Length: 359
Image (tube, rainbow, N blue to C red; front, side):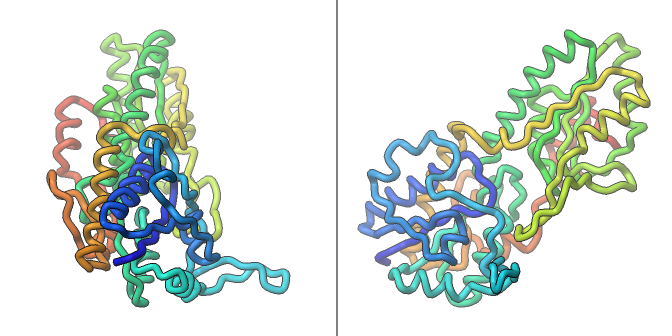
């Protein structure tokens, strides 16, 4: 093992730079060169690489984002190109393999979520030596207890809820916080419990607007003139659909969600007559410095990925099981999403706390 390449794919999240730093420092310890790939799989297709040494990763542990850049639009197996003035979709996966081979790369470390790791798995099927590192604030990857970036996103949402509580109580309003979570409601569930929400709505449980309105009205009848609601962007009303803002071509999942908070607010104002305000946390959940937990987890993942490469174990993803970092087949991580089960201990605890889940 002489040379590794590393890329960050998909949406950014806190802890990416911590992983890159750990990969470079662990590789240096074993006298392995590291090449960084710019802007995710786009850079792998176009051959945009940069050497990474200790000086390049000095001081980046607390920084959000990724020094390599990232994108969730460029899939080598369905790559958009301008040909004869027309946009066409072509398979350029062989270009990725050639670019890595020409630079003497022995293995690729792919840091990403469901979309990026699916691409990595397909490249592995073509013979590339690949190791996955689980990244997503949604925490929706199977085969790992937790992805890095999730805890910091929860902390950000919980801080927002603390601030919304004061203004909700002062103005006697219903405050709705819309958080990320397309198909999985982990952020909404954890932040809602930590932030003292009265209602938590997640994609796994289609909500009955009458139940939500009743919960708000019951609080008002008890003299509580405000309520706090956390809703995941992918939540949907019973018998309804997710609110899609628009489609984005070229992405692994082209849906761009947004607007469920506003829809919920309008519906509740009509039913309850209480003034409602909506805050969409959006990309604030992705940005900023990783918290201590994510810095540690990211660092452990980076070291574990280099160790897997040294052991010659490829087609795997490093994963957190309990307190241990283990290796699992990459296919186990991407064959389906990790959704909130209806018997999840925290979900059951939320119900015992009197939090309305919309069903």
